[in-house]
Length: 401
View 1 (cartoon, one colour):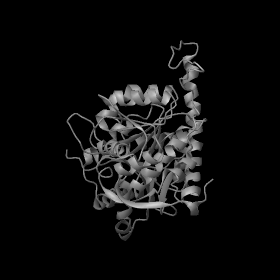
View 2 (view 1 turned 30 degrees about the vertical axis):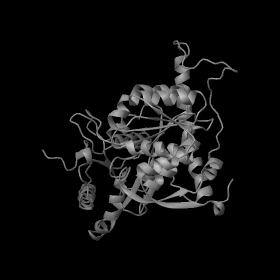
View 3 (view 1 turned 180 degrees about the horizontal axis):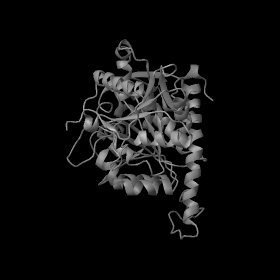
View 4 (view 1 turned 90 degrees about the horizontal axis):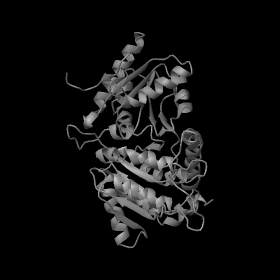
């Protein structure tokens, strides 16, 4: 393994979209299939620029839709190419049929998602409705909280996807606009050599090869279909450990790792707040004012959404008097309507942990959620906890009734 001291970095001001593009370049991708959609477009624009400048030896495939973009990535990956694409919102929904094909064929594609609200009505602003709709597609799903983490996560994504124990596609999500188009200092590798020592290009999956003919995507009758899908169940179980291993190795090699759940002040707190994506930064900015109001609140950010990190969630719950779950998507038709909250409640129930879970739906369509909102949410939760109150439906924070 490469020694950390030998790794050379370049510090650049990058948006999260550009950070993702740099990571794809450093992963030495062979194919990028591109169709523009706000707020993802600058990812593939930057990759096109890298290819045109000779900085990346890859083929850019221009397609007529997002459905075709993922289909092209599937074809490339099935031939043994390291494939990448990016999308958002309605584009991800148009891909939805093909998401299942990519995972069912066990192809290690990596895709970035600049999470954005869905129509109708038309909204180009950010929330996580699009990404949460993918939770049953058998993709590994990582959610980054910074541009730096998005860069690192794309490199880790290839490590995870191409592991022979997994062989599933990986999605790296992050906030549309609030992250995709805002800039921060990002450390990128001075050359792709270091990245390729971490993720060497080795075909570990079944490919279309005239020398060794196989059938890909054949018809499966009832005698075998169930067993084939169960193999994906087992692959997801393996992915849980592989994600941890990939992150730990990344830390040893490059000096940065993130774990599965990032935590701040969760030990000895009155209650703990769990969320995902860039809103975690808002929570951390609010921590001082919350403590000045007499509440010891801890904060946690879920980085891995699929496979769901039940072990880490249980550990967080075991040291919590209550969990406050902030969701930026809605599961329509359910009293507890936050996708993350529903997963958390399921895990706690199945393990006999009986603590209050207060679910707040926030930031839908990029509705502002400020430090003052964070204070009010935590204060309201603390008052419910003191009264011994539980809730049987989500609280839609900031909505006008």
